Length: 402
Image (cartoon, rainbow, N blue to C red):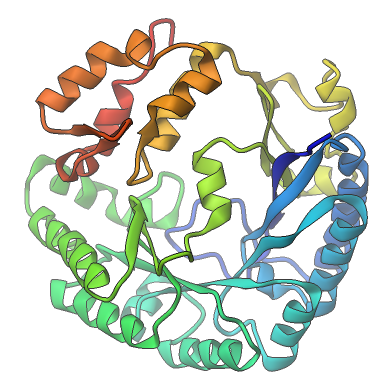
C-alpha cells in the first residue's frame, strides 16, 4: 500500500533575544530549560509517530524562535529519533532556520552529518543600523561569516530572509540590500514587508504610523505608501533579472530550489507540528499543541492516536477544529492563491467532487472583471493588481455560513 505524504514541522521556541517586531511563540531560556524541552520533544515524536503508520515524511522544517540556538548534538538527536520513528523518504527536504551569531563550523558540520540539507538564514537587512533598530543580535559582517562557513560546510541550498518597509528605510537602502544579497547567489530568497503586529513592542511604537500610511497620510517613521510600493516593485524586477522565479507572493527561488515544505503547506499536504504551540492538519482535523511552556515541559502535548480516533486525546476543545467541506474549500482557495501558479481547476474537482465554477464561478468572474484574477491553462491566479490587494481578494472566497 502506497503511503501518504506528510510534512513535519518542529518548533524550537528559544532565542537569545526576542526582536521588537516578532509575534511568534518564542522566548529566551536557560540551557537546562532547553535541554528539558528537547527531551520532551523526543518523547512527543515517539508517541505521535505511532498514530501515523500510513504516512511517509517528505519534508522536515525546524522553525522558531531560533532553532540554531541548540547544540548540534541535540539537533542530531532529534533527527535520529525522527529517522527511527517515521518513514522518511531518501530525498526529503530538511530545513533549519538559523540566525547569524548562533552557528559555527562544528555545528554546521553536525547539521550536515545529521541529514539537514537546507538552511534558512534570517538576515533581514545588510545595514547594521536597520538590524539594530529591529533588535537583531547580529551584524551584516557576522552574517557574511555565517554564510561563508555554511558554504564551506557543503550546504548547497541556502535561503536568505529579508525584510523591507522598515522604520527609517529609504528605497535606495532596500536596493542596496538586494544588490548585496544577490551577489552571494543564494538558492532562495524570502522578501517580506514589515507587518506591525499587535502585542509586539513595534505595535506600541509604530501602530499609529501604520494607520497614517493606510489612510494615505505621510507616516513619521515608516516609509510612505509610494516608497513601500517602489521597494516591492524593485524586489520583483531585480530578483527576476538575476534568474529567481517568483513562485509565491513573497518567495523567490532559482529553478528547482523552491521550498518544498512551504509549497506542501500551501497545497494542504497533511502536516504534523511537534513542539510548543505547533499546528497540525491531518485529514479534516486541524489541531495545535499547548502554547504554555510549563504545560509542554510537563508532557501535555496531547495523544494523537486518541484524537484521530475521534477523542480529544488530552487536547482542549479550543485547540481542535474539524473542518467541514466548506472550510476545506475556503482554505484551498486562500492558500493556493498565495502561489503564483494559483489554483488548479482539476485539483479542486479531485478534492471536492465538484467543478470550481459551481462554487466560486460568480466570484471568479467578478474579480477577473476587476483585473484582480486571471485564468489560463486550467488555472486561476492573482494578477499583479490582485497581489497588491491579496487580503481583499482572498476574503471574497469566504462562503455563506462563515
